[in-house]
Amino acid sequence: MKRALLLITTLVLVPSLLACSSSGGLSATGGGDTSNALGGNAAPAPASGYATAVAGIPVDPGPTQTYRIGPQDLLKIDVFQVEEFSTEERVNEAGIITMPEIGDVHVGGLTSKEAEQLIASKLSERILQNPQVSIFVLESASQRVTVTGHVKKPGIFPLTAETTLMQAVALAGGVDDVGKKEEVVIFRKQEGGGNVNAYVVNLAAIEKGDVTDPRIVADDRVVVPQSGMRVLGKRVDRLLMAWTLGIL
Image 1: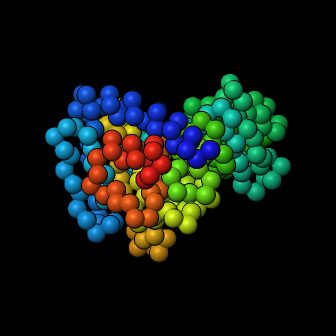
Image 2: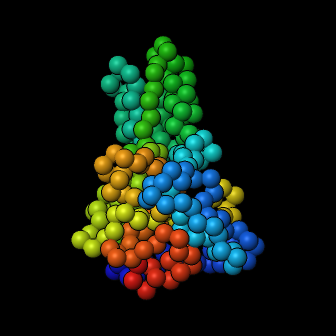
Image 3: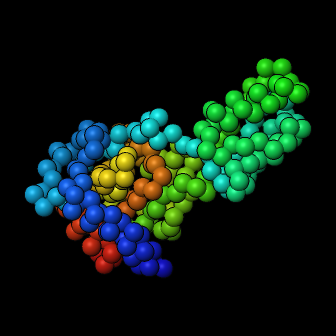
């Protein structure tokens, strides 16, 4: 099962990496924070165009990748001090939820803040004065992260708006007995669909509170290598080959 998941995920990644390299599209960091998470400096990209895996946490994507609600997302909606209007609703395929008293509300494609404002407006039109609405994405069916390598339950998992690396690894059951926490790799496709970067992050240092726990974004691939393997400074294509063969 683990080997099959590794192969399937790599078959998705490798063509995009090859396409990027043919146009010179792979880069080493993409502006990530290389604040010595592993005690090393960023390695330059080799002449072939393939990126090298470098030490450092990815920069927070900020508002450029603000989460937008999609079909099958599960939302927790709280209306301050009005418990009867607070509810959990799953977004249907048309992007619609059904709220008590106000009926259908189209929230698909909106940010949480935009959906809060829309629901507050509908409540104020019919029932409440100045309602304060908060929305939390409990489950995201439209945005996912792949966690594989030496974790106990590799798989593809739904993201919430604020999922971090440590939380993503926890979704996969945590690192197994031979996993190497000190060099966990995050593969991330950059804005615009071009560059793919590989960040090597010290998960053990994150657990101790010594390094910032980076936020995970949609379509990130997190790979936990085997103890004894060194990934820092290696080319992304070679990492992917080792990953596919089950020796990473």
